[in-house]
Image (cartoon, rainbow, N blue to C red; front, side, top):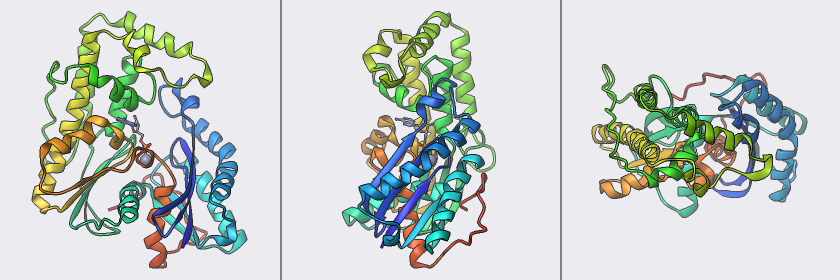
Length: 363
Ligand code: KG4
Ligand code: ZN
């Protein structure tokens, strides 16, 4: 059962060919990082333009790498939402036109459900049966959602962020300190050089649903900390280093950053990352206890974070915690094809009138 997945909800144009929901024959991701990096975040108009440029070659490459032709496909799964509407439209419209022209069934996939399926894909591949009820924590640049899953494709929302997403907090703090975009990878890289206990941040107290998350207070606390110190020249030095970097040079190495970053800033980064991890795990653990969970899935771009990956290992939890491998944690289309697979079995096909939905919810 060969499915082509297409993903274009934010700033990655991706296509992948996946057999039986777990054998990844190809997974191509065209990142727009270099386009958006200098603006410190994703610029929606530029994102749509880049998707338009990339979609045809990316899909062609995914088919070629997997040795497939369109007639080999059982279905095409495409992200319908949530995301930037102009970006979603590019991938979804291209998927629709391929399906229409070749008589291939179309399957609409929720991007968040895709992130959860990056873990399910790898579990299927290794022959691991996920036990239910499971909790799924999806943490990315756009989302921080905690779901309970009683079976595959059955989700109930337990909590979500009331303000910034976890990845957005990483991105905003990195931008404020002159570390560029995206912020998660650079903070992850530098946090081990700082003391995570150096700056004490208080975790958000939630009125109402205590399984909701909040990161804006933490972001403001970092801003206050920076304002109370004379940091302008070190921030400017990092911004200049980024600006003068040639286009193909790739992100700066730890040594390059360390040369421009004093210890107190490294301590701040480590403490900030630690506070985000504590905020995420505190709510996930409380939910796991309430639900008598038998597994915890953590996925989305922030699931790449080494501190977050290490934390459950040292906590000796009574259930397994699953992270996707890093390449499947950030946006990709293999997870979209994997989420389309069980929908194919249920014959949940989309009509050609299906619309891109910026605010699509999962539960
Ligand atoms: O899942 P993703 O690629 O796109 C969205 O659906 O948003 O996630 C991107 C987010 C960005 O905010 C980025 O800073 C964050 O994931 N991220 C990380 C790491 N790698 C990416 N955050 C923390 N640590 C990382 N290693
Ligand atoms: Zn994502």
